Length: 396
Ligand SMILES: *Cc1c(COP(=O)(O)O)cnc(C)c1O
Image (cartoon, rainbow, N blue to C red; front, side):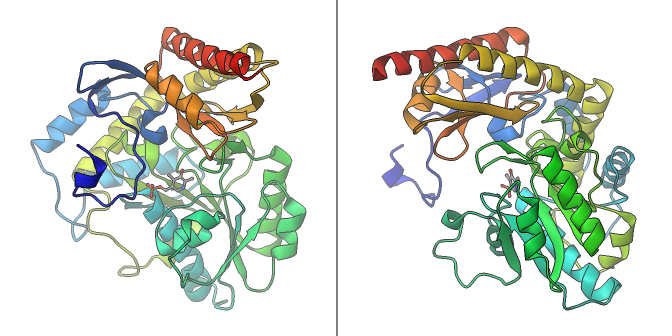
């Protein structure tokens, strides 16, 4: 169907594919053509498409009960929260339906903690980072350090300031009597797959400690095994006060979560925050099945191994390619930084049946299933590296 006839708002620039079936790292379009998926619906289907461990639990739940609202206890929600706190440095969980909502909840609880728990209402400002991405609600797009998501949406909410990424001295200079929190991605995903320097992360955690600020980690893209640990913060030897999750948590069922340390529990008293669908029977069944599988099958460890395999293969096979500036990432979230635009290269890779996705204009992003086979990785790498080699040869 032509875009002009669509009944949808044109707010997405879509690739010209329509998929009708998925299994593991494979997708099939409406003509039966098979694709190798190295992007996972934007780092969402971490266990692959329609993973058995999740579909079985979902089917059971679909036949039993979908929704009652948060006016009642929801056993799956309690169990998923329990599993998240047992496997993180946090103590309490709030469920919502998306990443933006999880970050919105983080921003709200940070402010409310200062206003209602420790009685310092003058502290409401949150430091975030240039090129960060935190979502599309008014508060989270304001938190986002990219102007393009803000255009046409003024007036924006107050209370956000921006520091250059990987520059702890600049962060320190922005801390004032108004600051309440620092909000950070440990790998900037949408901003171009840019990993944080370990020293920078430690310094930011120290600043939070010294100045009594809350450390909010946006692990919406990096969480749930993506970087080779269940949470990316485990790589850095720090403990955040708040962590947000979404993408990989439900294997594609819409679910988001805010995880917080004990001291934050009373900041969200009854009636202070909520959402109708948050943590319902279906989304928490998917979340539980996903997380249990991750833990039981040591999926994070596998992601670490496969991620370093992909990284070293890319580094050796693309060495000397003049179109490639650098290759970087953490675990199975990997970016190929090009010297110019990636759009045509991505189009060509797609046409050869391999799905990758940009992260900004000049980066090809790989976020394959954490369970993808080595054969599939090799096939995907062949296509990517040969495409880049041909393009480099054609450019001279
Ligand atoms: C995708 C993403 C979000 C937004 O999540 P939505 O579910 O699209 O609202 C926020 N932060 C990061 C780091 C993300 O990758």
